[in-house]
Image (cartoon, rainbow, N blue to C red; front, side):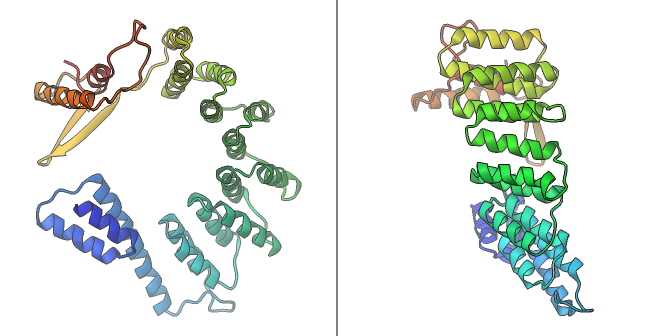
Length: 347
Protein backbone atom coordinates (compact mmCIF):
# COMPACT_ATOMS: atom_id res chain seq x y z
CA UNK A 1 0.00 0.00 0.00
CA UNK A 2 2.84 2.37 0.91
CA UNK A 3 4.62 1.67 -2.38
CA UNK A 4 1.45 2.42 -4.32
CA UNK A 5 1.02 5.76 -2.54
CA UNK A 6 4.66 6.68 -3.15
CA UNK A 7 4.23 5.80 -6.82
CA UNK A 8 1.07 7.91 -7.02
CA UNK A 9 2.82 10.91 -5.46
CA UNK A 10 5.84 10.55 -7.77
CA UNK A 11 3.67 10.18 -10.89
CA UNK A 12 1.81 13.37 -10.00
CA UNK A 13 4.97 15.36 -9.38
CA UNK A 14 4.42 15.50 -5.61
CA UNK A 15 8.00 14.46 -4.91
CA UNK A 16 8.29 15.92 -1.42
CA UNK A 17 5.20 14.00 -0.31
CA UNK A 18 6.67 10.81 -1.80
CA UNK A 19 9.92 11.23 0.14
CA UNK A 20 8.08 12.13 3.33
CA UNK A 21 5.95 8.98 3.08
CA UNK A 22 9.07 6.90 2.46
CA UNK A 23 10.66 8.26 5.64
CA UNK A 24 7.45 7.52 7.54
CA UNK A 25 7.49 3.89 6.35
CA UNK A 26 11.08 3.53 7.50
CA UNK A 27 10.21 4.92 10.95
CA UNK A 28 7.38 2.38 11.20
CA UNK A 29 9.86 -0.42 10.32
CA UNK A 30 8.00 -1.24 7.11
CA UNK A 31 10.64 -2.71 4.81
CA UNK A 32 10.59 -1.16 1.32
CA UNK A 33 10.50 -3.23 -1.87
CA UNK A 34 12.56 -2.65 -5.02
CA UNK A 35 9.49 -0.94 -6.50
CA UNK A 36 9.49 1.45 -3.56
CA UNK A 37 13.15 2.28 -4.10
CA UNK A 38 12.56 2.84 -7.81
CA UNK A 39 9.80 5.33 -7.15
CA UNK A 40 11.83 7.06 -4.42
CA UNK A 41 14.83 7.42 -6.71
CA UNK A 42 12.63 8.97 -9.39
CA UNK A 43 11.20 11.38 -6.85
CA UNK A 44 14.72 12.32 -5.69
CA UNK A 45 15.88 12.93 -9.24
CA UNK A 46 12.91 15.13 -10.04
CA UNK A 47 13.02 16.99 -6.73
CA UNK A 48 16.76 17.64 -6.70
CA UNK A 49 16.73 18.56 -10.38
CA UNK A 50 13.99 21.13 -9.86
CA UNK A 51 15.77 22.49 -6.81
CA UNK A 52 18.94 22.91 -8.89
CA UNK A 53 16.87 24.63 -11.59
CA UNK A 54 15.49 27.01 -8.98
CA UNK A 55 18.99 27.92 -7.82
CA UNK A 56 19.98 28.58 -11.44
CA UNK A 57 17.16 31.09 -11.74
CA UNK A 58 17.89 32.65 -8.36
CA UNK A 59 21.49 33.26 -9.41
CA UNK A 60 20.28 35.18 -12.43
CA UNK A 61 21.53 32.79 -15.11
CA UNK A 62 19.44 33.35 -18.24
CA UNK A 63 19.18 31.41 -21.46
CA UNK A 64 19.09 34.45 -23.75
CA UNK A 65 21.46 35.96 -26.26
CA UNK A 66 24.19 38.19 -24.95
CA UNK A 67 27.11 38.09 -22.53
CA UNK A 68 24.94 36.82 -19.66
CA UNK A 69 23.78 33.78 -21.62
CA UNK A 70 24.89 30.37 -20.39
CA UNK A 71 23.94 27.79 -22.98
CA UNK A 72 25.90 25.11 -21.10
CA UNK A 73 23.56 25.34 -18.08
CA UNK A 74 20.49 25.22 -20.35
CA UNK A 75 21.78 22.12 -22.11
CA UNK A 76 22.49 20.44 -18.78
CA UNK A 77 18.97 21.13 -17.55
CA UNK A 78 17.41 19.78 -20.75
CA UNK A 79 19.56 16.66 -20.49
CA UNK A 80 18.71 16.19 -16.80
CA UNK A 81 14.95 16.54 -17.31
CA UNK A 82 14.76 14.22 -20.33
CA UNK A 83 16.82 11.53 -18.62
CA UNK A 84 14.48 11.71 -15.62
CA UNK A 85 11.51 11.25 -17.96
CA UNK A 86 10.24 14.81 -17.38
CA UNK A 87 10.09 15.47 -21.10
CA UNK A 88 7.70 18.44 -20.80
CA UNK A 89 10.00 20.20 -18.34
CA UNK A 90 12.94 19.51 -20.63
CA UNK A 91 11.16 21.04 -23.60
CA UNK A 92 10.09 24.00 -21.49
CA UNK A 93 13.75 24.76 -20.75
CA UNK A 94 14.68 24.12 -24.38
CA UNK A 95 11.99 26.53 -25.55
CA UNK A 96 13.22 29.22 -23.15
CA UNK A 97 16.66 29.17 -24.73
CA UNK A 98 17.03 31.82 -27.43
CA UNK A 99 19.99 30.00 -28.98
CA UNK A 100 20.82 26.33 -29.34
CA UNK A 101 23.96 24.46 -30.26
CA UNK A 102 24.33 20.86 -31.39
CA UNK A 103 24.31 19.67 -27.77
CA UNK A 104 20.95 21.37 -27.20
CA UNK A 105 19.34 19.73 -30.21
CA UNK A 106 20.91 16.37 -29.37
CA UNK A 107 19.63 16.42 -25.79
CA UNK A 108 16.08 17.23 -26.83
CA UNK A 109 15.86 14.93 -29.88
CA UNK A 110 17.43 11.93 -28.12
CA UNK A 111 15.27 12.68 -25.07
CA UNK A 112 12.12 12.59 -27.19
CA UNK A 113 13.28 9.34 -28.83
CA UNK A 114 14.00 7.65 -25.49
CA UNK A 115 10.54 8.61 -24.24
CA UNK A 116 8.69 7.27 -27.30
CA UNK A 117 7.84 10.64 -28.86
CA UNK A 118 8.41 9.69 -32.50
CA UNK A 119 6.47 12.45 -34.21
CA UNK A 120 8.03 15.07 -31.95
CA UNK A 121 11.50 13.77 -32.84
CA UNK A 122 10.94 14.20 -36.57
CA UNK A 123 9.32 17.61 -36.18
CA UNK A 124 12.19 18.88 -34.02
CA UNK A 125 14.77 17.36 -36.37
CA UNK A 126 13.25 19.22 -39.34
CA UNK A 127 13.24 22.42 -37.30
CA UNK A 128 16.91 21.89 -36.48
CA UNK A 129 17.84 21.44 -40.13
CA UNK A 130 16.02 24.66 -41.02
CA UNK A 131 18.05 26.46 -38.36
CA UNK A 132 21.24 25.50 -40.18
CA UNK A 133 22.51 23.06 -37.53
CA UNK A 134 23.89 19.72 -38.76
CA UNK A 135 23.21 16.34 -37.09
CA UNK A 136 25.82 13.98 -35.69
CA UNK A 137 25.89 10.19 -35.31
CA UNK A 138 24.16 10.18 -31.90
CA UNK A 139 21.30 12.32 -33.13
CA UNK A 140 20.73 10.09 -36.15
CA UNK A 141 20.34 7.07 -33.85
CA UNK A 142 17.54 8.92 -32.10
CA UNK A 143 15.90 9.83 -35.41
CA UNK A 144 16.08 6.27 -36.80
CA UNK A 145 14.82 4.80 -33.51
CA UNK A 146 11.86 7.17 -33.63
CA UNK A 147 11.05 6.03 -37.18
CA UNK A 148 11.27 2.41 -36.03
CA UNK A 149 8.87 2.77 -33.12
CA UNK A 150 6.45 4.85 -35.20
CA UNK A 151 6.50 2.38 -38.12
CA UNK A 152 7.73 5.02 -40.58
CA UNK A 153 9.62 2.84 -43.07
CA UNK A 154 9.89 5.33 -45.94
CA UNK A 155 11.01 8.10 -43.60
CA UNK A 156 13.57 5.78 -42.03
CA UNK A 157 15.09 4.95 -45.42
CA UNK A 158 15.19 8.62 -46.32
CA UNK A 159 16.95 9.64 -43.12
CA UNK A 160 19.37 6.72 -43.34
CA UNK A 161 20.49 7.61 -46.88
CA UNK A 162 20.63 11.31 -46.00
CA UNK A 163 23.36 10.59 -43.48
CA UNK A 164 25.99 10.08 -46.15
CA UNK A 165 24.46 12.02 -49.02
CA UNK A 166 23.43 15.20 -47.20
CA UNK A 167 25.31 15.29 -43.91
CA UNK A 168 28.59 13.53 -44.68
CA UNK A 169 28.08 10.94 -41.93
CA UNK A 170 29.19 7.33 -42.38
CA UNK A 171 26.58 5.01 -40.83
CA UNK A 172 27.88 2.84 -37.99
CA UNK A 173 26.68 -0.57 -36.86
CA UNK A 174 24.24 1.16 -34.48
CA UNK A 175 22.51 2.87 -37.40
CA UNK A 176 22.30 -0.40 -39.32
CA UNK A 177 20.80 -2.03 -36.22
CA UNK A 178 18.13 0.67 -36.10
CA UNK A 179 17.25 0.00 -39.73
CA UNK A 180 17.02 -3.77 -39.19
CA UNK A 181 14.72 -3.13 -36.24
CA UNK A 182 12.63 -0.74 -38.35
CA UNK A 183 12.23 -3.23 -41.21
CA UNK A 184 11.60 -6.14 -38.88
CA UNK A 185 8.89 -4.33 -36.92
CA UNK A 186 7.17 -3.44 -40.20
CA UNK A 187 7.21 -7.07 -41.34
CA UNK A 188 9.76 -6.47 -44.11
CA UNK A 189 11.70 -9.58 -43.12
CA UNK A 190 13.29 -10.38 -46.48
CA UNK A 191 14.33 -6.78 -46.98
CA UNK A 192 15.90 -6.76 -43.50
CA UNK A 193 17.93 -9.89 -44.32
CA UNK A 194 19.13 -8.42 -47.61
CA UNK A 195 20.02 -5.22 -45.80
CA UNK A 196 22.15 -7.14 -43.26
CA UNK A 197 23.95 -9.03 -46.02
CA UNK A 198 24.73 -5.77 -47.84
CA UNK A 199 26.36 -4.15 -44.80
CA UNK A 200 30.00 -3.06 -45.18
CA UNK A 201 30.80 -4.62 -41.78
CA UNK A 202 30.23 -8.07 -40.29
CA UNK A 203 26.82 -8.44 -38.64
CA UNK A 204 26.88 -9.43 -34.95
CA UNK A 205 24.47 -11.42 -32.80
CA UNK A 206 22.50 -8.27 -31.92
CA UNK A 207 21.56 -7.69 -35.56
CA UNK A 208 20.69 -11.31 -36.30
CA UNK A 209 18.85 -11.56 -32.98
CA UNK A 210 16.71 -8.56 -33.87
CA UNK A 211 15.81 -10.20 -37.18
CA UNK A 212 14.97 -13.51 -35.51
CA UNK A 213 12.66 -11.77 -33.05
CA UNK A 214 10.86 -10.18 -36.01
CA UNK A 215 10.56 -13.58 -37.68
CA UNK A 216 8.87 -14.88 -34.54
CA UNK A 217 6.46 -11.93 -34.36
CA UNK A 218 5.46 -12.22 -38.01
CA UNK A 219 5.50 -16.03 -38.16
CA UNK A 220 8.19 -16.31 -40.86
CA UNK A 221 9.40 -19.81 -40.00
CA UNK A 222 11.58 -20.29 -43.08
CA UNK A 223 13.60 -17.14 -42.46
CA UNK A 224 13.65 -17.77 -38.73
CA UNK A 225 15.31 -21.14 -39.30
CA UNK A 226 18.04 -19.58 -41.42
CA UNK A 227 18.69 -16.77 -38.94
CA UNK A 228 18.81 -19.08 -35.91
CA UNK A 229 21.32 -21.35 -37.63
CA UNK A 230 23.44 -18.28 -38.36
CA UNK A 231 23.27 -17.21 -34.72
CA UNK A 232 24.30 -20.62 -33.43
CA UNK A 233 27.33 -20.50 -35.75
CA UNK A 234 28.43 -17.04 -34.63
CA UNK A 235 28.83 -17.66 -30.90
CA UNK A 236 27.76 -21.09 -29.62
CA UNK A 237 29.23 -20.49 -26.16
CA UNK A 238 27.15 -17.39 -25.48
CA UNK A 239 23.83 -17.52 -23.62
CA UNK A 240 22.24 -15.27 -26.26
CA UNK A 241 22.09 -18.02 -28.91
CA UNK A 242 20.50 -20.25 -26.26
CA UNK A 243 17.62 -17.85 -25.83
CA UNK A 244 17.27 -17.44 -29.57
CA UNK A 245 17.48 -21.17 -30.13
CA UNK A 246 14.61 -21.59 -27.68
CA UNK A 247 12.75 -18.91 -29.61
CA UNK A 248 13.11 -20.91 -32.83
CA UNK A 249 12.09 -24.07 -31.01
CA UNK A 250 8.95 -22.33 -29.80
CA UNK A 251 8.16 -21.23 -33.35
CA UNK A 252 8.15 -24.88 -34.43
CA UNK A 253 6.09 -25.81 -31.37
CA UNK A 254 3.43 -23.26 -32.27
CA UNK A 255 3.11 -24.99 -35.65
CA UNK A 256 3.02 -28.44 -33.92
CA UNK A 257 6.19 -29.53 -35.74
CA UNK A 258 7.56 -31.56 -32.83
CA UNK A 259 10.22 -33.30 -34.91
CA UNK A 260 11.75 -29.95 -35.74
CA UNK A 261 11.56 -28.94 -32.08
CA UNK A 262 13.59 -32.01 -31.12
CA UNK A 263 16.08 -31.34 -33.95
CA UNK A 264 16.75 -27.78 -32.79
CA UNK A 265 17.19 -28.89 -29.17
CA UNK A 266 19.58 -31.64 -30.24
CA UNK A 267 21.56 -29.20 -32.38
CA UNK A 268 21.90 -26.80 -29.45
CA UNK A 269 23.19 -29.56 -27.16
CA UNK A 270 25.61 -30.81 -29.83
CA UNK A 271 27.08 -27.34 -30.29
CA UNK A 272 27.41 -26.75 -26.60
CA UNK A 273 24.88 -23.93 -26.44
CA UNK A 274 24.04 -23.55 -22.77
CA UNK A 275 22.09 -21.15 -20.60
CA UNK A 276 23.73 -19.46 -17.64
CA UNK A 277 22.16 -20.68 -14.37
CA UNK A 278 19.33 -18.51 -13.13
CA UNK A 279 19.52 -16.88 -9.74
CA UNK A 280 17.03 -15.09 -7.51
CA UNK A 281 17.11 -13.73 -4.00
CA UNK A 282 14.88 -12.29 -1.32
CA UNK A 283 15.67 -10.36 1.86
CA UNK A 284 13.84 -11.33 5.08
CA UNK A 285 14.65 -9.81 8.46
CA UNK A 286 17.85 -8.27 7.11
CA UNK A 287 19.06 -11.65 5.81
CA UNK A 288 19.45 -12.29 2.09
CA UNK A 289 18.36 -15.74 0.82
CA UNK A 290 19.83 -16.73 -2.54
CA UNK A 291 18.39 -19.46 -4.78
CA UNK A 292 20.14 -20.98 -7.78
CA UNK A 293 18.58 -23.27 -10.37
CA UNK A 294 18.51 -26.84 -9.00
CA UNK A 295 19.78 -25.50 -5.67
CA UNK A 296 20.00 -28.11 -2.90
CA UNK A 297 21.98 -26.12 -0.36
CA UNK A 298 19.38 -23.89 1.26
CA UNK A 299 18.71 -25.04 4.86
CA UNK A 300 14.93 -24.58 4.44
CA UNK A 301 14.67 -26.15 1.00
CA UNK A 302 12.07 -28.70 2.19
CA UNK A 303 9.77 -25.99 3.53
CA UNK A 304 10.20 -23.90 0.39
CA UNK A 305 9.50 -26.87 -1.86
CA UNK A 306 6.41 -27.77 0.19
CA UNK A 307 5.04 -24.24 -0.25
CA UNK A 308 5.74 -24.34 -3.97
CA UNK A 309 3.76 -27.57 -4.25
CA UNK A 310 0.83 -25.89 -2.48
CA UNK A 311 1.01 -22.99 -4.97
CA UNK A 312 1.23 -25.46 -7.86
CA UNK A 313 -1.90 -27.24 -6.67
CA UNK A 314 -3.76 -23.94 -6.41
CA UNK A 315 -2.69 -22.99 -9.93
CA UNK A 316 -3.87 -26.32 -11.30
CA UNK A 317 -7.26 -25.86 -9.64
CA UNK A 318 -7.62 -22.56 -11.51
CA UNK A 319 -6.75 -24.46 -14.73
CA UNK A 320 -3.49 -22.58 -15.26
CA UNK A 321 -1.34 -24.44 -17.79
CA UNK A 322 2.15 -23.52 -19.02
CA UNK A 323 2.76 -24.66 -22.59
CA UNK A 324 6.26 -26.16 -22.52
CA UNK A 325 6.19 -28.89 -25.12
CA UNK A 326 4.39 -31.88 -26.62
CA UNK A 327 3.00 -34.52 -24.20
CA UNK A 328 4.40 -37.34 -26.32
CA UNK A 329 7.92 -35.92 -26.34
CA UNK A 330 10.50 -37.71 -24.18
CA UNK A 331 11.61 -34.38 -22.76
CA UNK A 332 8.08 -33.32 -21.83
CA UNK A 333 7.27 -32.76 -18.16
CA UNK A 334 4.15 -31.59 -16.42
CA UNK A 335 4.31 -27.79 -16.61
CA UNK A 336 4.42 -27.11 -12.88
CA UNK A 337 6.83 -29.95 -12.19
CA UNK A 338 9.33 -28.51 -14.65
CA UNK A 339 8.83 -24.96 -13.40
CA UNK A 340 9.37 -25.88 -9.76
CA UNK A 341 12.13 -28.46 -10.01
CA UNK A 342 14.26 -26.77 -12.64
CA UNK A 343 13.34 -23.13 -12.13
CA UNK A 344 13.39 -22.88 -8.35
CA UNK A 345 14.59 -25.58 -5.99
CA UNK A 346 15.13 -29.24 -6.83
CA UNK A 347 14.84 -31.96 -4.24
